[in-house]
Length: 60
Image (tube, helix red, strand yellow):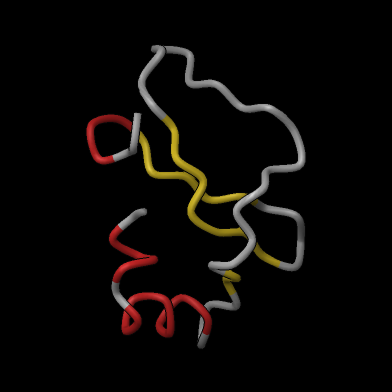
């Protein structure tokens, strides 16, 4: 579980005013980093964008 999901204030800030949905953690397509570093899906938005944590901060 990421910092965003463990911290209600962070989730609220992303929801408003930025319109990010932290409950949307299923990416539309499989995404891999070119370097092989870990990616953790943390949010999405109404446009279909998916947001990730990258590297050492992401869960294995």
